[in-house]
Length: 218
Image (cartoon, rainbow, N blue to C red; front, top):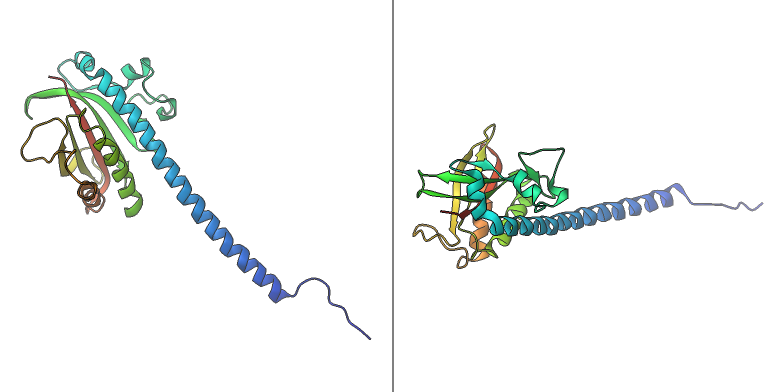
């Protein structure tokens, strides 16, 4: 009597499932990496738009803000300078990039620091994991460096857990500001620029970091 076996054995099926599992993990990892890269590119695009908007309007924004700090997001919204995808649930205080990071656009008046006034972009990012947070920070500074001839000053700071105020300033860079203690963005290598991101994302007791970009208006 002959016996015929149809289908696959349990061992063969387990082997097939193992192969599918390995391929799935690789596909998910590849998809996650691709999505992160897409968000970085989108963040660059959004920041380019914001920098261009503030560069074009910051002198008029000084009059808008008067002698105090003033949120200029409503003003720029009326001019259609803010991408719609950065707006969130009627939030007038912040706009949000592709990673969900908050951006505050404001005028400033700082008689205590060089007697200056102007307009600025303050970007606040929650710390994700060390590597992704550094890449986000590096992407912002890489973009800002391209505008070194337009902006006045930029800095990278940490924010202490539970606080809304900036903590330690790790690096400050001249754009058109001429301040002997700060290096010029146009001259500093990207590797040195990125060191500020490394320090800001590794600070004990901090859960966020910030990048501030300022234009001088007076």
